[in-house]
Structure formats: C-alpha cells, structure tokens
Image 1 (cartoon, rainbow, N blue to C red):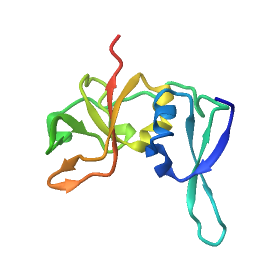
Image 2: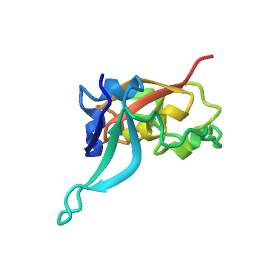
Image 3: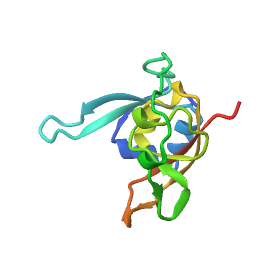
Image 4: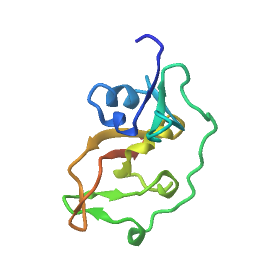
Length: 138
C-alpha cells in the first residue's frame, strides 16, 4: 500500500475496506478532528500510513475488574461492555466490547482486535458498533 493521508468521518473505521487496515495496523487514525466545511462543522479524523501512532508512549491502564462495574451484553454474555479506553480493566483477560474509537489507542496497547460487532444489545437496547478486544496472550 502506498503512503496516504485521508480525512474522513469516524464511521469510516467500520467500512469493510478500512477496518482490516486499521486492525492490522497498516492505517492509523489520529485523535485529532477537523472541520470538513466551515459552515457545517462536520468533524472528521485523519487516517494515515505515514505515522504508526500519534503518541508512542505506553498508555497505562489503571482500572481493575469488578463484575458490578462491567455489564455483559444480552446476546453475548461472554463479553463485557467497556464504554471507553480509560475504563478497560488492566487485569481482565477475556473479551471486552469497546467503541470503535479504540482505534485511536490500539497501536499503543497490548490488545488484539478479535472482531467488529454491530449486533450487540445491552439491557434490551442496541449498541453502536463495538470492537471485541482481548489482552494479547503472551
């Protein structure tokens, strides 16, 4: 793949042609957003092959797993829900559902992406797309 720099909406992360590039760390998404058009203020992200990570420091996870803090999906009880990167339990070894914005931090964390799920329900309500991750097995 040639080097590229693309600006696009965050939902691009779920596209069938883009998701594998992000999963395999060929393409990186930065945490920066940009206005596409001055008058509409549509936000977007930078997707690039030019840098592998915006911040190469290891991001330390500090939460510990407590079953009361992490609900399980109605239709996938083997997966816990985690609403953002800062809430990922550092001591949990099984499957975790995280928002697609996890791609912002993926290059710096010792996790593997198992799959992209768009069918998860929590307390009877549909959840937006979730990446299913697991700590890398050493």
